[in-house]
Length: 472
Image 1 (cartoon, rainbow, N blue to C red):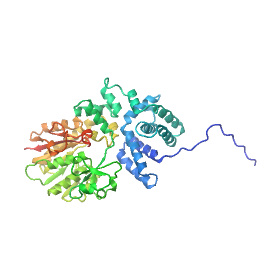
Image 2 (cartoon, rainbow, N blue to C red):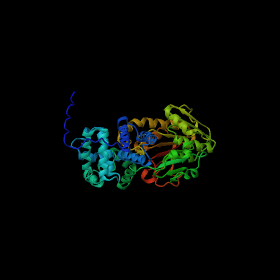
Image 3 (cartoon, rainbow, N blue to C red):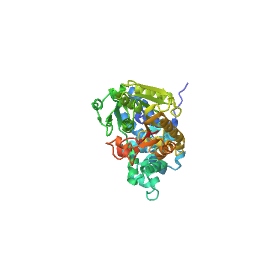
Image 4 (cartoon, helix red, strand yellow):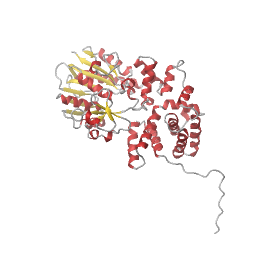
């Protein structure tokens, strides 16, 4: 049989297979998980990085770049969306989400990193060819070339409304926060433009990793012997790991004698433990103990005084995390799975009670940047009954003369002072205790008697604390 003649190739560039970039593919996969499954980056990214290291695809620099691409893109999503919208010929909602993720990663490399423009565009187009196909890669190329024509300041001048015309929308675009969050944080600060801009900027900074040396199990001096470790600013048990520090490499963390815990969280536990108490100091309660950071510190502090800690958490899997955090505690403790609004204990059973209530998490936007885009104002109405119910139960659980600490990782007034004020109206047998003197080295805690921590002032999550004494 005669051989068939080959068809002549069409003129043009020969086909080239797209170059797979493990770092950017991993960053894209993490963003897709956040978008498609409502996952949190701080839960999705570590196993992806671990798998990449195990297969030999990643070194430490690759892991650092992938982490920066994911978190940087999520933090600046609002700003980047406004810029991309100015560069496409359709509403942003009509751009396929995977395409938008590739574009956002590219914009972050162009405007938020030191990667050269040509390299940022080229790498993003190659990523698009791998995960989207050649056709949509051309769209990505066209959009990113438009973005590359200016720097971030130039783009902000173009896409953000003037501050004098609409200050909240201006700040929302420039600092990449939803408008309603900008408004809520501004109300909580009660200050002028300088305070709000500093706070919003702090929300977009990469937070340091902070460790806690659990008393009786580890010392701060031991942790300071680790590479890249420096003392915390406020807590006597805190150690900060400078950039590149890996908690999993610290022996005390691996053994559970120390843990990863924001310094604001440590200060809440310390303020409750240091509050003046009338009468015995033998039984402590953490009524919303998951995932266990505060419970582990409280348990260690209670052990130093010979006190017992009961750690209660409604969700069984989170109660398991609490048990793991407390494992090895030097003093007596118990972990139970129970609903704090339906107490499994008798009224007046405890001397000190902590309720760190579920909330919108607006105080931890540095660590969970995607939460700002996921939360809605109506979420406040969903949390309100639970927050009030938990505080009422805590006041019933404490004995006369005992102390209740109401804490949230949100500075929103609807989750902080409004809750405390509403509940205390129903409990005239209580007094607010000035919490500020209990943290004497920490400045700018507010007008009192409650206290509010801030990322831009204290380098912590925006933790709120009110201390309440049962008087009758």
